[in-house]
Image (tube, rainbow, N blue to C red):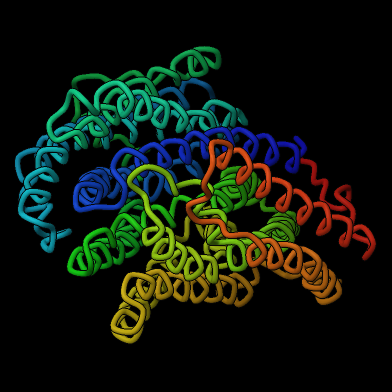
Length: 515
């Protein structure tokens, strides 16, 4: 399998999902702006997302994929089937219980997460939390399916799945915002419909590989099975690792809810733009690397293990650094282009811009963590990321004390960025110290070339950002003119960057990596 091709495929399909995600946020900004109501929806949606990251994308995936990869490499089809069925059964029953509990204690959860919300917005957040909390169970089962398909080297469905949620929310916003009272409730309905569609999408691919999970009624038998016990043993410290990151998110949301109304929304809109490079690079490379690293570890091939990490880190630097530069110098045009419509005014553009620039400073860290963490998880070492995560949590909150009084909501984003850079540095040091990763020769020259190639990109975007008045363009064709101008500048900047790389001797074929 060509890993670059696989990563490219995942990135391309993830791009589709992220574009629909941006369209979703554009519609939310247009219809609802950045207000106490949007703060309420973001808080309510964040709560099931915390559970999703704990059970699905975080601890569960990090424990399940290496075990399943090892089982597929060493055991027969019957053992694989039993492992999948037992894990699915245990996960489904636990998620059902937790989802029900979340519905019952929704007021306490909202109070814990965002006690500073306006009273009406607080009540709306409670209602939407109760409606959306079962989404965590649906999307966790989607993550189970994605882990199975990724282990079978099928990345297409899992990369496309998020688009269904975005399209569902878009449809609900358009069709229901005049029907629901308050209108923001339409978004919560869209989330639940999207969750059902996402789970339904997995079935044909799972059936094709004959690995459709079978959930049975005997929870205790599944819970006591050897495969589930092994996974739980790995999940406990991994859950703590993911919980550390989510605790930081809860604290930051709580702080933001006590700042100016709209602060939670400004951070969310900026984070949506950050998800573009983070998902296209970090998530795509990470989802390809973890199964490959797990197979290299199962084969006791330490040289290949190190080379896989080196490959991922080089691509990270080459693609994430120009993205970070673009976010730093072209943040305001991007925000204005995407969100400056309807209820989202020039003040909202300025506030979101400051948050995006602060997030952009940590982009290399955000993407780097996605590459480096699988270096531990593939060897079933989840304790080290836990310890490092606690250090990062404490450091991030200490920085909040310094940054928030000075920069308000942007201080929260800056503290998160610094924490991401610290996390990546500590993970890198840990891999080097234990001998899991040894940099290939030529890193110094490679990094120098990548840094030098940023110059034409930065100059083009800096000129474009300062030469045009991006906010509140007037005229019937203003939106098209603004879109065309931004697209032309970004295309010119990208071409100049890759041309500079070529002149400096870097070619895409150098990053072909086969497995």
